Image (cartoon, rainbow, N blue to C red; front, side, top):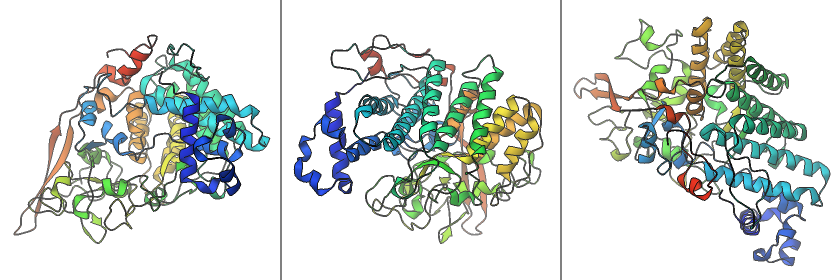
Length: 539
């Protein structure tokens, strides 16, 4: 395991936090102790320093990290200029080259920090109420780190203590079920200690509702075909109950406007999110990375036409099933979430119309900074702050990353209820989402296996680009179908004399998914460090 020495980690972490958040320390502290000579003992005697250390445990990977976008690793999108992503798309990842999905070190570093906290916190001379809240936060964050690990790798070593220098660092993998049970127990502990909400500068910390909602997701994954091949009903029952308990809190609700909910901090649909302050320092660059080249963006994440075809017509039918669908007017009368999520040729955008056509389209390879043009003729609209007229590293928005929101809880509950035979309630929950004020899609009416497909499809659309699709198709064990489908793009040709456009769908990237890819390989460096660590099958 990659374990760092405790003293070095503490000093480096606390120094960093003190330097960037000096307001957290009073002048008296600065006068009595040079910043480069904070001892481990000092940290655990000072409430502000302990708080700063807890804050480091929040440094989990979020969905706006440039080199770790999940969108292009499923049938949602393509990532320009990143061979590491294409290795995943082609089913060619190995324990050595899996850079795009190497989350092992990040999450185990979080776990190590959490373990240090638990080793020290009981003896810390701070108020019990504050101590309990911190214990709840760190229990949640350790659970979240382990959940992301098992969602990628399957069972992993459960490390709950801090290694000493003379300890044996080798550790065997625990089973998925053992890890899942531990995660649930940690979340239940957190649930009992955390408040329902925060105010002021504490907003953004995890809450009781966040612990409950994450538990519902963990239990849903544990009940799913990948991890529940026997389809044990009691697992679905636990998942359903956990989701219902979140709903019964009565404090979350769907936001009326789908587009706005992602740009509005701490709205009533958000259960846990991470806030950013790009006006102070660059914390994410999604506006720069997602904007089309014609507006000064890098256009690095390109939605696939495969995904565009998954957005229903306003009638509630897929384009391939709707006789009114016109392939030469492909973007008319679609699910309103399509217009909120994807930029397409002809879309009203800022103060102009998007143009991905050839020849000469402003957002094409012949437009401004054409080397940044989308390979698919599509760009991501969801999340971007459209008040940014021309993004740059000094002109960015502050869109928060939402880890968990209420619509997911409703979909989790719907899926679990379907598996338990309550199709009526499952349909009702899906239709509640489809009836959002800015969406208002026709209700679904299916039953049986067709209803399950509709529930899965609703997740694909409602939660698009939110780091669910990669995990959903694996836990459902349908990735052999979804991720073996070649990536498609739209080619638009415009007659310069008449302005008439012709639309043609083409394959531009062959994609492959093989059975071993249901789990990703453990990094070879970790296998070499730990002789007891067994690699996933097929790698």
